[in-house]
Image (cartoon, rainbow, N blue to C red; front, side, top):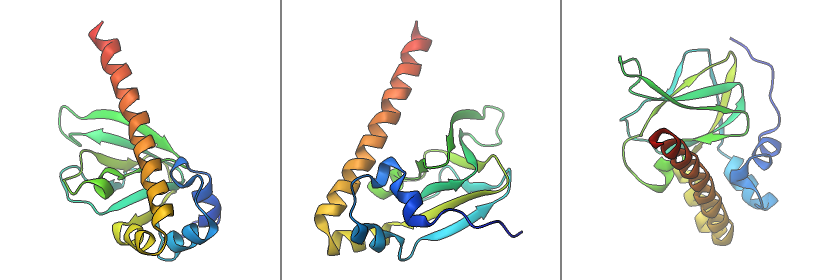
Length: 156
């Protein structure tokens, strides 16, 4: 299925928390091999338990993050929209994916950023790489805080 073109990848990346403060050169390095992937509603983008080496930026549509996909105890963890990221934990730590991600809308388009793209940034612009890793850490902290709040609310 053909989808209308979305916003220029550099413009899209600049709107996300992950890429705040990065230089034009750094964004150019990161987008040189950026892949746009299209998903229909209900398509699985990543699967819990598989090894990952890619993070994704939502360019269009939305996704849901799910534990125990298609099991009787399937749990919705979060819904993510345009500009948000997922899969970033696989960039930091090489362990199986902690959840599955399913497209909620048609079309849903994501940009895939491979670990090797980040390594290229590390080699050519280490200070920009450090800023990117700091931004990933900030995003992970925001999510952890959200989970802590939910857990505390359920405990009361």
